[in-house]
Length: 122
Image (cartoon, rainbow, N blue to C red; front, side, top):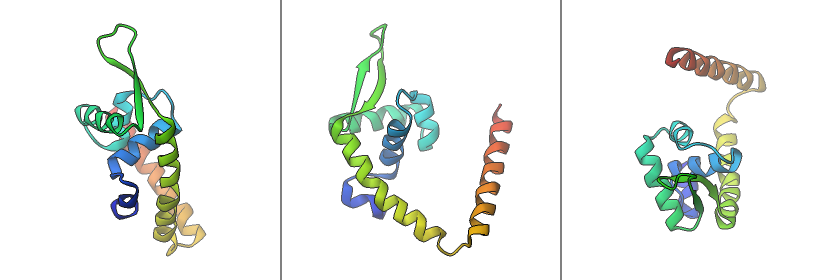
């Protein structure tokens, strides 16, 4: 994924963060951290980098002490949508060695793994 995203100037954590903002407007910083497999502090750094590049904006929170909800700018939305193609192509290449039945089995196994982790962390 790093190689696929490099021409667009994105890292994998930046991509995951921006994809999450694209797919789930209003997502919390904690959830962004979980999805990007980074700490909350790292998400703040990621968001700072994305803001500096003009791809993300954050509104002030209601109490003014912290930054509020992050959202993609128009240029951020254009960039992440451009990144979907190379990432989708990479995913398709990775899965091309599996039959449809194997893909379904893999999906089911991954969902079971996800459920096990969620059950464990609760």
